[in-house]
Image (cartoon, rainbow, N blue to C red; front, side, top):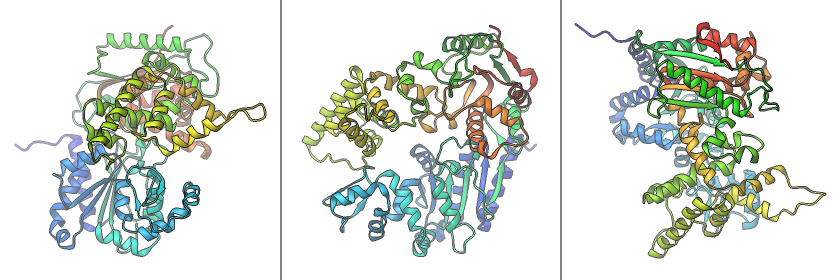
Length: 577
């Protein structure tokens, strides 16, 4: 007797058949795969289908299928799952674009002066001359023998070159099929150029976009992609969560319903709010309406006790607490100084500040790799693909610099670490930070000209113990919904408790719930609504079995009504104080 597919498997096969049909017909498409749908599985299946179908003809024409990913981790995973086929070029967006433009040296030298950040450097160098243009360490500079591009230069230069027919023809000839992973987080201007110059045009590559616009949580991504030449395919499957969770996601997002693997699998959803608390709540633009920090902590403890009675186990291997609020955790996690240093908590919670982003995402991983004696990984972390380490003295200089850096991380301040990096230049600070450091050093405050707030933040930040940066990184690696920008979005856990409150300058989830309960969302609020809704959806779609939400901010009756509509009235209850 033939096995019967589960509802999720049946939905997955239906979507994949539509993808194959588009690939066979030369039709560009967008696969919209909600949380837990198995997007990467569909992408890998599509790549395998294309290799089997086109490998002979592509080999004859020296062509490849391009697969553009958002991260190096995703690139490596996809390459591994497609057996590192020589017919697939799998690269991040910047690496792919550099491979396209690197051969157009004369044109690049003509376009670079159009980028404002280069003006001063070009003037100091007396022009670009005939120097070769390279993209290696990610630093913007002009030296006697080389012009080095910054990471932020690569996409704008590619977009400008795409205005030329010859360049577009070269792309289509080399890559007749281009698949883009996590399309919603791909640079909006780059996707805009694809829509303008390729989609619907004769002789253009076939494009396949894989992603989910409800999971766009980063500022410069394109979000939902719509074009008359692109067919939409919805993957209505959820292989992650039980029915209790998926039913809630479907009520939140009825236009893309999902089917589960096992309709009888047990699960739980519980919602707690703090409206019964009668004390004075916090005030201010970003904290208004939230519980005081100590009461927020107490409400979290109370919620955990209730859930423990329901059978939850709050161990690291079974339950994840996601914080969509922040001050509650700052002291407990070991970085209590940071909320008082930065005007906006997103500076450190979302790594929106260049200093925070560099220290947490670049320097700390490099130091970890050095201490583990993984020197290739260390150089990769700092973006040095071809470091100048050619003789024993180079190795010794790197070792001395890194040993001192490791020691300063343990006992020094952020300023101590930055000063060491400026002096040793191993590794080298990003241009943006070096510029700010020079500006801070040169500034002399006076009554007539007080220090600008941005510089004052940096000055205060330099006095913070560096140990708080290490603690902040631990937070981003384990509790932040933004974890290195992609961590939680791709992750799943047995049980998830989401703590929702204020403190984010770009997020107000209570207002989002209010807007979701209204018939029409004002145009001026649309972007903020989608930003809040998407992060909320990402957090709520992580659990396999149990989901709970705790709201420390005061909610309106409309917001509570929205929660009842999405999660079921019976799941919503006030905490007692």
